[in-house]
Length: 349
Image (cartoon, rainbow, N blue to C red):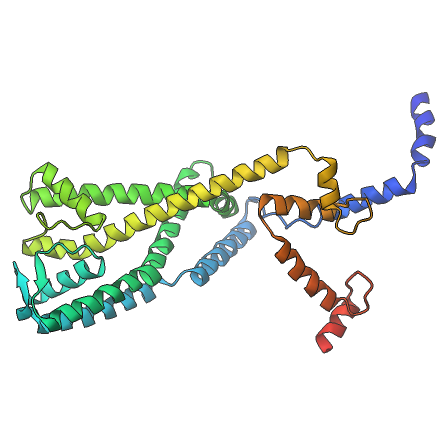
């Protein structure tokens, strides 16, 4: 008790500057984004969780084209391409099984740049059509279909995370946080599993339906999904070409997305390593001088955060300059702070 009585006057005599620093620190702590709501039993939490998931899905719909739109573009492309190649089918040589089926098959093989060589244009008109559809098909794959594939992968990613946490009985808020934290990693898992399934299905189909050996079937699968298309092994039966129309399109897109996600994962890993290095590196006097933006020989919390963010590569000096310019435009009374009066004056002007 005596010790507390002795220390109490000392605590009362703390400098007001330290108390101000502490209050400022608490204000800065409150500036962080509001955390996601934790799991709370009851109907109220279920409603909030459903709203969180609907918000997340609406964001995905804005970032990626809807699957219906992707199908629409694909159907339009295949309809026009099939019609054109059907009318010039006599000018396309090779092993044929059915007029319409061969036209759709040739259109898909052209669009994905597989180009087996089992069907080849044999006239000037057919060659010009093939040249047009190969470029337009590549544009369609790059601009629309790949984004649609990314949209589907993110849907499967959500289902994967739900399955992993099925026994934990966690709410959707935890699932959304997990998606944001390890988004690229789960994308790699999903696309890798999908690619393996497509390779196995294609190999089995070629071995059973096209009567190829296991080695030849796997060889044909690899040359197809990588769009090499040597042409010595391909789909030559009616059932094989029906299967190829769907399988070639999905497998080539899947491989392209696989390499995209791997590159994205490596970039994210390097970024995390840079962030860890910045956080673990000790500050020096030189760092303090650089971080001192207003040259008052003191580095505040805002200056310190800006300096560290620039070191991490999260922002650049150009970004800071743009934000400062916007701040100056809003700071009508030039007080160095923003208030509701400043915003009202700025909006009215």
